[in-house]
Image (cartoon, rainbow, N blue to C red; front, top):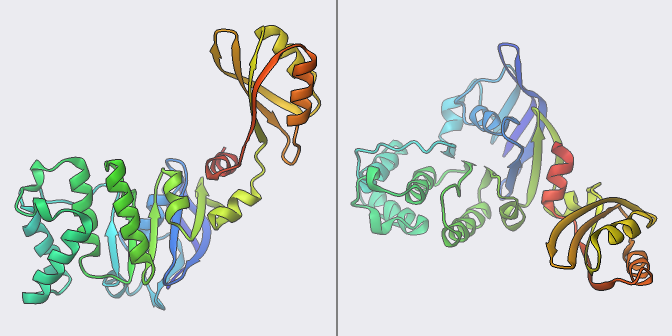
Amino acid sequence: MIEIKNLTKKIGENQILNDISFTVKTGEILGFLGPNGAGKTSTMKIITSYWQPTSGSITIDGIDAVNDSLQTRAKIGYLPETVPLYEDMKVSEYLKFAAEMRGLSGEKLKARLNEVAAACGVSNVLQKPIDELSKGYRQRVGLAQAIMGNPDVLILDEPTTGLDPNQIVEIRELIKKIGKEKTVIFSTHILGEVSAVCDRVIIINNGKIVGEGSPSELIGQAKSKEIINVKVEGNKEAILAVLNKISGVAGISLVKTEGTIMIYKIEAAAGIDIRASLNKALIMGGFNVLEISKTEANLEDVFRELTK
């Protein structure tokens, strides 16, 4: 559905995007990750034709998004990072306006408005002025306008910003439902959200793609160190002296002190399990070992590894 080839964007001497290429299929939810300033929002602005690329191509359902942007815009629902709301309108007026912009009218407009309002959880504020809404409700209204025209492609820039945990779960479920039939790209800083929702992930850093694959594939490819959590009772300096002598230990961090109980985070090279060595050395040193556990790699580890 979406094909990006050799996309580059420069503003003056500043290289925003550097020759990135990727595709997104119909029925796929793509998570777009990266630190602030990595190029996520810029890419979304180019896909939606708000910005023109310096070079490269974007096609949506086979249509050139640069030369035929009106046709591609008709296929896209877009929720930008800053939600575009008219604060002097009531929610119902704003959504009616969004529906009319998408060519809806009469009973079809009324039915679609009610359907979308219920799906996004704004039915109870339809008659409220937008300037009286909380940030969470504003975000929901912005999402409602994005899906009002039942678009083939949905581009969401930080869609769950400002929502409480229950609302986040509701919006996740809505995105997953939409993603069964549509093409969805969304950016977020909530890495757990990506694991819960996305079929595939692209990680971008300094305008370049540095990682791509399903969440499980990326975690499997991670080069992060193994992390061992150790809870042990004894003298801090004496414990540290023992830990420093254990083969395979690459780093030691004291996480917390609870009286005479120390909680450490131990780093070891990937693929090396040092738990048995840790346990033996600490017991031989005369310390009470209360807990030794291994932390499994997660998407946060991958993100830090690829964007550091």
